[in-house]
Image (tube, rainbow, N blue to C red; front, side, top):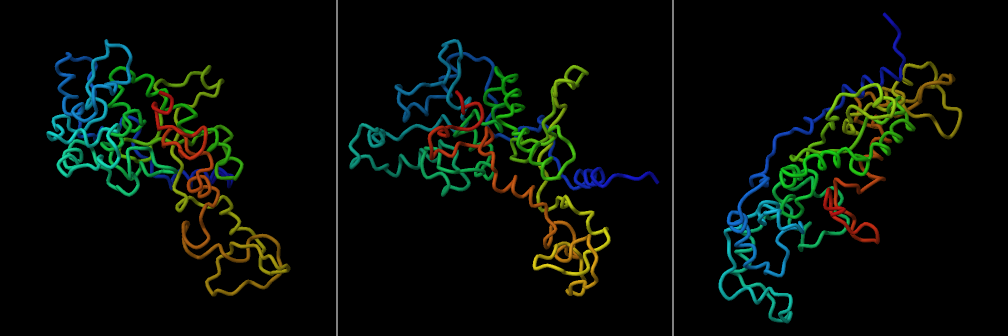
Amino acid sequence: MKHIEPRWLLLLLLIASMAWASDESASVTLSAPVAPFTQNTADAESKSSGCVSCHSESDQKTMHRSPAVVLGCSDCHGGDATVFAPAGTVAARDPRTPAVLRAYPEPYRAAMDHAHVLPANAEHWPSSANPERSYTWLQKESADFIRFINPGDLRVARAACGACHLGIVEANEKSLMANAAMFWGAAAYNNGILPNKHSILGEAYTDTRVAARTVNAMPNDENMDRHGVLPSIDPLPAWEITPPADIFRVFERGGRNIVSQFPEIGLPNSTGLLQRLEEPGKPDIRQSNRGPGTGSRVAIPVLNIAKTRLNDPLLWFLGTNDNPGDYRSSGCTACH
């Protein structure tokens, strides 16, 4: 049998442990229809009629300056545009109304809750403002809610913006500001997780908030390979099932006698006692006689990348909204 270098065997083990989601063509799970490429003015206005009964005419109906773009509120945001503010309640929510008179009447609150898409975790979204340090809260919400608060989020932008801007959305999903491939690639190589100097890992999600594989729209040719264009980027594997980078140390000789106050850790020991014969090599303790993901057998560098999110937040999540330079939304809306 041909000898396989440990680093390549590790790569095979890593790949075997990864559970990839489907690629970018995942089916849309939104309950509201996708925004149309074109429609008449009457149809568009019907999709804003209930919205503007609260959100007054002074509010911009779409982010597009050109009147040639004919869209209604629910085309982009979803929600129920057939719900109108109850008579006599609009003045109570007008920001120009004195605060003492601005408490929402119950009929108004009920209509607002019916028209809006509500979060599954209301405690995370106490107001319409982006919360501070939300990090991955979007992953715990429905695609409908994500679309309602931000149609430009990359999980839902294909449905909200894709009829006209699909090429831009796809390019955005593949940008370094979205996938952080440069950071994950460097961290994976420098910590011995992967032997590749070229990035093969990056962040992306489907509209069902599942980690996704990002695939280039066209096959790579020689020129693209020479310039470092990647054919695909895969999600970071779960840290708790990723084999530790030094897993093959358990097959080395040695590590059977502690000669310093800092024993090496890693050797399986069914009796719970340390081995006592002097030999350098494999670790003395803490490799655990259980499988990867238990005891100390976890890939700590992968945990550091996934849990501490040292590079975050990038375009897949909202800005931290607590310091200059990071007051922004997610996806396309981060710029627009």
